[in-house]
Image (cartoon, rainbow, N blue to C red; front, side, top):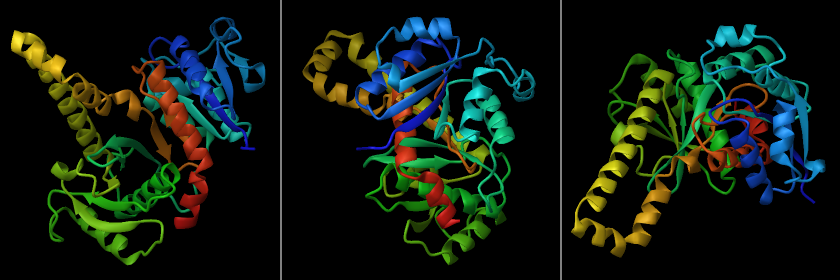
Length: 333
């Protein structure tokens, strides 16, 4: 029998919460019977939404009416008190009541409250925000996506190890290829920090990943590299650019296929290919950024996603816990 994975859920963060959070839990539970959800938020509303849709043995609701709002600055959120749904959810992981915490709430607040409550893994100086991106072959892990604007070569080296450990936790059968995001693939390109990181990575040998040097922005989606490492400024710009490009292509395609009679006939003839295309670029499938470097994993679901997207980030939680992410990082650092 599988061991139970306990997820602490902030039910009050993000748009349309707690409705989408509870719908996401119900949807996720259909295919994850060995998951226990410790849900933090407005008990009256949550209980009505749950309404016996999952067994009482699989969840517990911790009542709190206070929540971190999307308008709060990270500092305001931390000062708002220790009885917000976000703070209590993170605290339950600190107390080892749960294995992992998830919130669709304010990202800055989640990072700050997580740092206040949870210890860093030994020998890691800064945590990083990482996420999954689709590529031609499968998926890549990209980090940092905005938690650290300035990074030293030691930070980037740590991110490489953490990113490789995350990929290995999510895809246990594969050995990831790791590369540093740079303005060229030649060894002489880039700033001093990147060059120093290159040297550190080249000297470190690991059975858990293979270092492949530099990768340029136009190669991010080709699938030859599974873990892409950068500082938070560059990573965030790359992420937003990729998201914007994907949205632009999808919108233009919709216009082309619905504008004229020929376009409409063409879209009917290609309906199965168009569905595949739409599914490949569906952001809900890649929902769930992971804050790593702390001694417990913290997952950030996109605030604007729906219940399907939230259910997918719950799935990421389960894979992280069953893949022993923290132990992998400790071993490789």
